[in-house]
Length: 91
Image 1 (tube, helix red, strand yellow):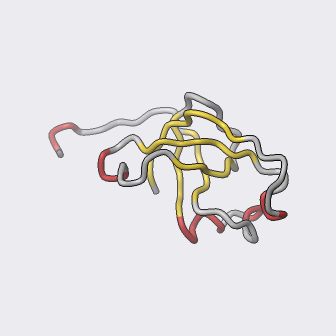
Image 2 (cartoon, helix red, strand yellow):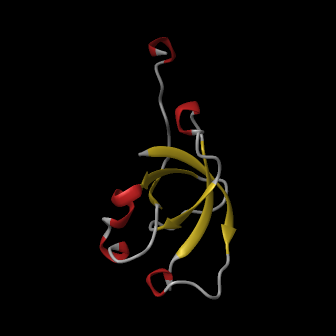
């Protein structure tokens, strides 16, 4: 899983049947170890919006939610983060 910020949305009137009815958002990973991937498109399964910090799964894990099982996706937003607490001395 990774933590990302929602920075935009994607509107696609023509898309694969497995994506019909899904909301597509542009997300950017927040922490350095995940920044190998720059901003990517993720399917929103929780009602996230622009500016929110979200929890994202990628790869085959992204297709494990009930309504995304047959969807051709690589990233799925599975949570909206309310707060992050870090112990800075651990880094």
